[in-house]
Image 1 (tube, rainbow, N blue to C red):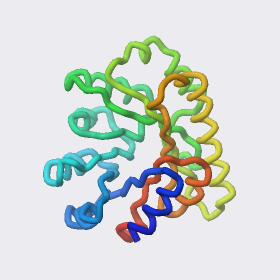
Image 2 (cartoon, rainbow, N blue to C red):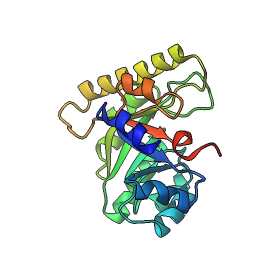
Image 3 (cartoon, one colour):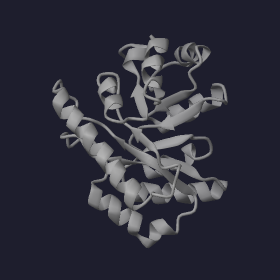
Image 4 (cartoon, helix red, strand yellow):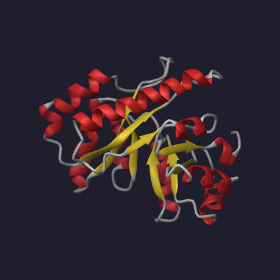
Length: 216
């Protein structure tokens, strides 16, 4: 299954993030032995534990809602934080990264779903953040793209529109704020049930768990 999914994703020049939350080290190592190196987790302490015990060439992606008091545990090793969903958490990432003398790659999470339980910026909030003096002063974070989650629904037309919305948000930010920044290129969208749709609409990173590991 891994090779089949990898081939589909590579056909779109995108990247597979294997979502390994709640999965054992042994299950992760099965995919690792098949060549998978990018894994996504949504709980900070579980991720920190896995980092300590698993191979150090794994690139760890944090994809969950991030509490400010947990940021310090991630900063020493995280490859990419997908879920910057408010300015407060970005400030904390910058603060902790400064202590480690690191620059942390981040994605701006947008709220594109109809479900109120999902987190993320709207476009006005993102503009205000990117134009703020506080953001301009930050030296230890780097935005490399955007992230969003579609509505959990069987209505694929709706999900497609949401993915199209995220792509247009990416395009707006690229033109207006990151036009000279080659690293601002990622669109993290699509999961097990809708990743082909996401790829069709421009995703560069898909976050797949169930198809690779099976249901919890």
